[in-house]
Length: 299
Image 1 (tube, rainbow, N blue to C red):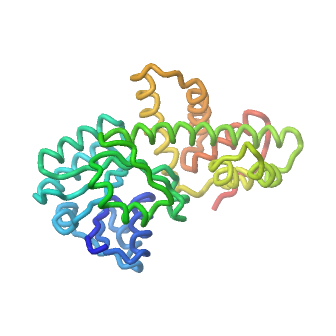
Image 2 (image 1 turned 90 degrees about the horizontal axis):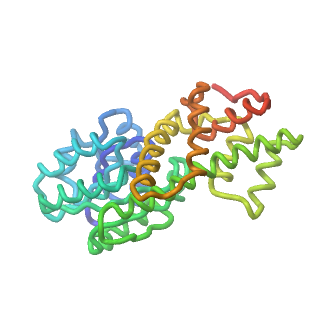
Image 3 (image 1 turned 30 degrees about the horizontal axis):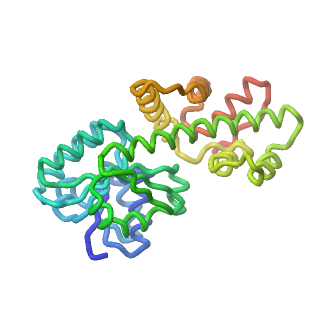
């Protein structure tokens, strides 16, 4: 496609998005407050922007992947200042649905379009082009951006024409991610208590009827007791997402008993000093509680 794509936020998610689009020979500009994140994409041909405002002035389509609502609010100020009616912003951060609705309204007042487009995948899955994305907003804008979505995801789903619907679907996906990680960890611990080898448990169960993406990917980390992948960001992401999930469930008066149990296990892992590791380290916390003594693989 001929359009210039700008990516704001080049961390574990945004950096992979930009990298995948560059590999598809798309013209990508990028900005991150951390210059090292931009430098990491030099070899792929990223055009580094001086700041978010400069990127917004240059880009036809903007992708944002940001850690907080405050960061999004700040970035939107710069995008709006570019004064480019019709410009599309693909907002990929995981935030509360009402925050996406407010962001869409703010851009609409400036004549710009927001697509609420959270991604369902950890960074490792996204890097391999295995992510799914849930999109809501203007259908014509969605259709225009299809080549972009197809450039960095394995599947995309149009959820509806109201911003916030994509984020509601992402909440359901995150619920299952957290519960499946915890279930895999409990199963791995149960098997070890019964005398089974962790690597064998993973090999057999990933070929069974009870497998899941989380068992396949994070179960492999559990089998090796190696939780370094993720760089410590994943537990931080979990804490943010857990708050969004529980508040959303309360707002619609829905029971989430399994999720509450999973969240307690994750919180226990953080309390045991494992918060710098990938969330699959919840397995180590459950093992410790069950008297399973395995060394962590560390640098």
